[in-house]
Image (cartoon, rainbow, N blue to C red):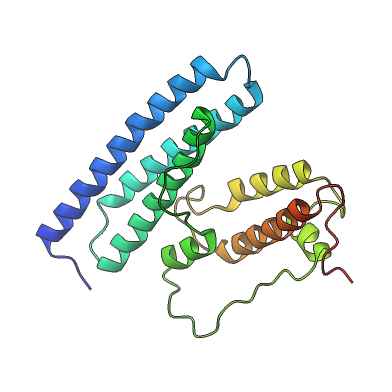
Length: 204
């Protein structure tokens, strides 16, 4: 359904306001991180600095897409992307300030990509492609039994290469992205349940 010009302008103005506010908060958080983390928590600082830089880069991508929005479905997808970025910012800001997150909900990545990709009409519910630790390690391209830090590092590197926001909105790699997200969550859940052991759940 097409947006009339009045509705489109109102949407663009509202999105730009949220983007501007988030950009200001991102700068404030980075300044605070430099003051409070750089000496005592340098590893955490480097991680959140990179994360906040990614937040800013994704905001630029949304700004570029805003002028091309003329359909209601496109507006919904763009707002879903902004909600996801706002949620990511809150994760980093909470780590910087060492406080519980204030967001009212956590956006599920699977739901995010389903919404952003317009895949809400799928008649069959996905039960998941990763059913064993062997499959999970293989999907992430790491050796079976690798420690969780190595798994996390591999996951981040893969996401950076194929995320739609990295590929100028190209969503052709979303099936692979969903698969590696599922693989990472599979291993992470097992690791949290048995932190002293490599994840073997479902591997036979």
